[in-house]
Length: 319
Image: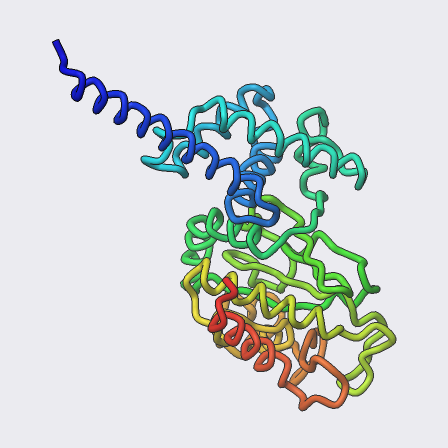
């Protein structure tokens, strides 16, 4: 027989375990539902990836896979968080995503028979936290693709040469006039057609601007806005930290710099009609994206300014 004191100790320990479980579950729900929180961004990223890449699975199967991935993400902490609670969080996030898709007239990929084709055109607004989650997930595949050409993961800055808030699927990220960031895929390792002969293992970021830009002294009626430049620099900080790559010209380049082959890469330019791969502002001027960020800037200063701002954001904790 247990003594009264021993019974009280067992009751106290049982209560402690129950309280720990309740606290753990409450914290999980809090962080999972925190607006723009990192955990919410990761959960939504998992849902989007399953929508796009697992179209042959039934909804319940996708839900089970999502629960498994979140359990893996939690590690040893998953002993405190039951699968039923994770499933409920997933269901609420799916409902929020479906509501957003309805408002923005974006197809529900679960029910769309042409999901693969349509998914390539899905564009949604993302936060820096979501960008970080996407980058971490895509890093291994991007590294593998880049290694085939013996170069590191690279990031290229562009302008669209279109109107403000006119977005294109050629880039992984489009930045609107007000600095809003939109992603065109749920998998950043998806190869896009943004930079000639340099798209493998690379990310393309474009500011939606520069319609009718003709020279460094005439960027047209829709030049890059200050908030677009800041957003591009913030994304730079996030990708630098997520990919563990330095913010230098070997890793982050404007299209103008890449077009003049300022990092010395040679993916086979000679065979494609560009000796030494130079077709930028110092040569044939076929591409000169962000050679300057505003009229009156010194020619060629755009990349250094973006990298400098990106470094500042990284040092101040962005990323």
